[in-house]
Image 1: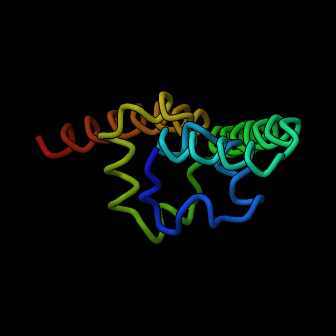
Image 2: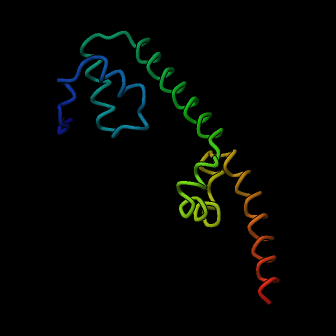
Image 3: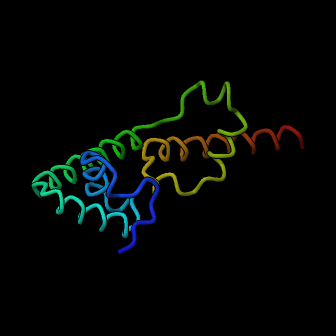
Length: 125
């Protein structure tokens, strides 16, 4: 298999190769295969690869937890009002993307915005 990566996989450190082997979804399949082959050539214990995969999984879980707890703050409305309102009104996939708290807040904000809009329209007519 040809190594067209920059820097070439063979020249990377063992730590870098373990990072590639630990996160196969984040890397090109060819890079992953070359990294595994190079680790094998360097006679690296495959328990280290399993450990790298375990650590990567923990990182992914931590990131997902962090994302799920992210919420709107008052500063979003003060400093980015337009962007925040567009996200609240038009973003439909917050929950699917893992932003669970934001999705709950979005539902409540949409209800408030709906009634606020109706109230303003009633006042105008």
